[in-house]
Length: 267
Image (cartoon, rainbow, N blue to C red):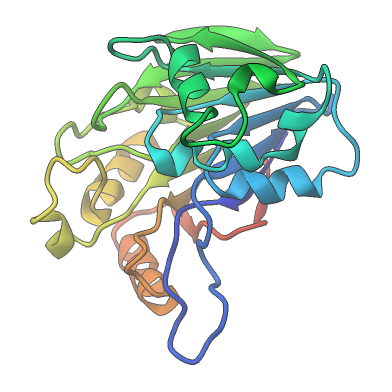
């Protein structure tokens, strides 16, 4: 399987540059199975570019949502396949307090937040609410698990032919040091929240994101083959992110990358 990043949350351009090397759009990752099955993780603004990149529509699409904070769903209404007549799209995600996952998404994709009513969309959308479970998607074994973030938030582990990819974009290790361990342990590739420096985290406890010192400890315990720092802070420039990566690499034996749009990883 191959994972391609289309959004990993914003970062600032370094002074004098017009583009960013890391970040830009909010969270969305494309996963392709060996059979070509398209699985998408989150629907931040990056999902728009993902949709436009599709040379031809797949037979179906599975969208796995970690949670419903706007930076993870705000691109959904701009995802071109949503407007493809009769295209089957399954949206998987956590249950919501006071209403269903379907009701929350339908409310977002309807006036006054969206110009069309949800029921007018021509694609065939169905919803599946998830807890902590494992199921099969065309040769992929998908496991969902709760992680530490405000509201009900999931991480995912996706396995194929003995290889594992784990996606935990929002997770506060400072409140629960082993949060998501059942998903992350021994993964071949781990995308994990690494938003703050230790100094920044001191004034942001409870916001739902991790400090790189806690991430270093986590990586040493989980032992993934490769880790990717995800969910960049919009206040961080490319140069600052690179300094964070250098600090993290000094404190862990795991190879670490910075999430960058259109970066692709074979798992």
